[in-house]
Amino acid sequence: MVSNGINGSNGTNGHSNGHSTFTNPRGRVGFDMSGITPAPVTPFNEDMSVDYDAIQRIGSWLVTVEGVKGLVVLGHAGEGTFLTEEEQVNVIKAFVKSVDNKIPIIAGITREGDYVAGLEAKRAREAGAAAGLLYPSHGWLRFGYQKGAPQARYKAVYEASGLPLILFQYPDATKATYDLQTQLDILAQPGVFAMKNGVRNMRRWDREIPVIRKERPDTYILTCHDEYLLHTTFDVDGMLVGYGGIAPELLFELLNAGKAKNYPAARAIHDTLLPVTAAVYHRGSHMEGTVALKHALVARGVLNHATVRGTLLPLPEGADKEIHHAVKLAGIPRVY
Image (tube, rainbow, N blue to C red; front, side, top):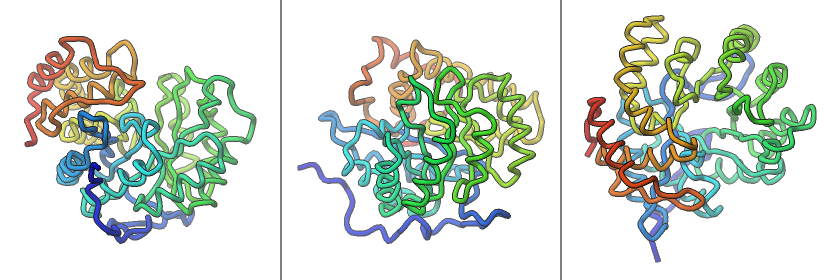
C-alpha cells in the first residue's frame, strides 16, 4: 500500500488555519488575496498514485516565495476531478501540512449538483481548506443555465458547508459564463469574498471589471488569464493562476508593476516570460497546460517526472525539451 504521507489530524477546521482572516464591510470572513495565489498541480508517482512527498516539496517551496497568499488545489491544473473523494481529502490535508498553516489552502469544488457540491465543500473544510473555488455545474458548459441557478448554487454550497467561496467566471466562449448582473448578485451574497475571472473576452473584461470594482468594492478581483496576464494585471488585486505554480517570483513582479501602472516594467517581465508562456499555454488545447506545468516543475527541480492521469495524455515528443529550454531562457532558477 502507498502511504498518503499524513499522520493524524491537521488540527484545522477551515477557519483557524493559522493565517490571518478579516471581516470585510459586508461581514464576510475571508483573507488577504492581494498577491499571487498559485494553483499547483497534483503530482503522481509513476504507478499513478498520488505523490505526497512531492506535494510536500511543492508546498514548502511556494510558501516561502514573496507575494504568495494561498494555494488553490484540486482545480484544473491540479487534476482535481481525476481523484477519488478520499484522494481529494488527503491532497488537501497534505497541502495544509506542506505550508505549515502559514497560508490558506483553497479547494476546488467541482461536483455537478448543488447538494453534492455542498457535501464536497464540507469535506474540504473538515480537511483544512480555508475557502472553496466553486465551479459552475458542468452541464451548463453545453446547455447553459436557468436564470438564478448560479446564485442559488453559491447560496446552497455556502449554507451547507460554511466554507467561504470564490466566484469562478468561466470564458465567454462557454455557456457557463456569468453575465454581469449574475456576477454582481453572487458577489453580494454572504460568504463570497473574491472572484477568479477568466472571461477571456477583453471587451467584456474592460467593460465589466470597472463596474464590479465600483459596485462590489469589498471583493478581491483575481485574474486567471495565464496567457493574457499583461493586459489584466493593471486591473486586479491578485492573480489566481496555474502559472503561479511554476513562476511565482516573476508573476509577483508583474503584479506589482501592474498595480504601480508601470507599463514598461510590466512589459519587460511579460517579454521575459513569453517563451515560457508560449511553451506552456500556447498549445493546441489549454488542457495540455497541466502536462506542460509538470514539465516546467521538472525543469525547476521540484518534480522528477511529469506523470498525469487520463484523460490527459503525454505531450508530443520533444515538448519537454522545449519547456526546459524556455524556463532556462527566462532565467528561472532551479528550486531544488
